[in-house]
Length: 123
Image 1 (cartoon, one colour):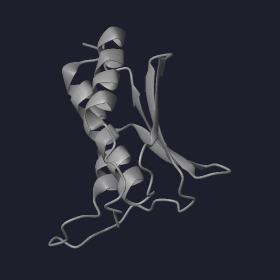
Image 2 (cartoon, rainbow, N blue to C red):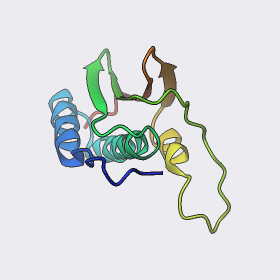
Image 3 (cartoon, rainbow, N blue to C red):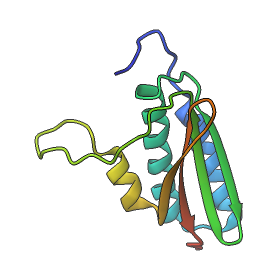
């Protein structure tokens, strides 16, 4: 699980950057809220399971699509789990899948990139 010696990622900074990018592109508030929640899930997963103190976040808006990528140093690929109803965790990727239009994983030489996309949901 989480190494207590790792620093937590700056969720506030990442959320503010995402919100600013989406507001400039004209996304609806509901889409911004969905994207923020999905972003937080990916960052926390990179921190906890990818054991990466500072995951790299890339936000790209273009062609009517928002793409958010979170990279960590672990080569272990995430799996969407099916926890029982009493489990306290294990639903993060289900949440991302439910909030985004698409999501996926790209293995890298060092680690991986987990991404999600939202199509143009403008205000």
